Image 1 (tube, rainbow over the protein chains, first blue to last red):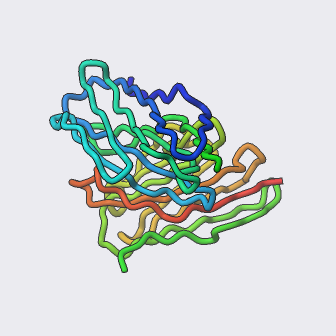
Image 2: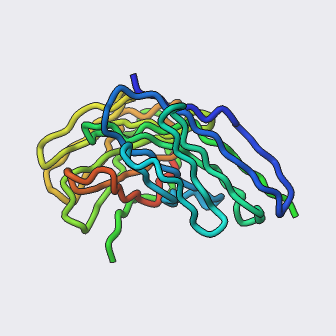
Image 3: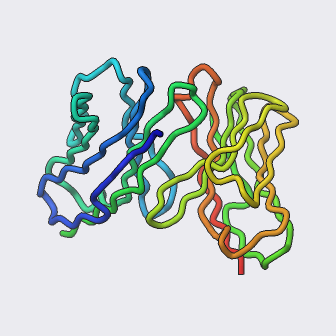
Length: 114
Length: 113
């Protein structure tokens, strides 16, 4: 069975703190994709990053960075120097090899206060 | 502009009154899918379609119907809505060989009283 676990339901930080959102996945597929989406209070889903199972390189985009480790089946997301605008629900998702579905985690609500 | 549109964006209805949420994309995508989002549960797939006239159940299809008569449209039909179908619904589309690049619609917030 395929599964995505985001163990942190809610995280509260103060501006400028660094914060890491955890994501652990389960799959038997040899080829798969991992994603992070942001859902701000307005409700739309904003695509942040996609990684395929053959690319374990970590990625940095501005204040955002992602750490993909196949050995621990984890795809963690770090926001450096958090800002109030980072307040949102963040979803980690797994794309199956058949390409028929994205399996989402339950989401982590991040609140950044000033 | 490439986009997935959903209508209506907000809907309040009563139990048992049939409704349709439309989803349309202008990117000539073969693959389309419906998800529902509930607090604490994330997004769960309802139905998906790999092409015209080809649809299949996702994880939570009970109480929903879909049809795919045209490539661009993938309506979600609730024949007899119930309060447990109150949710935020998302439509998504992609090329069938690139489902790792899904485009999501803006969401439809449905309340069934």
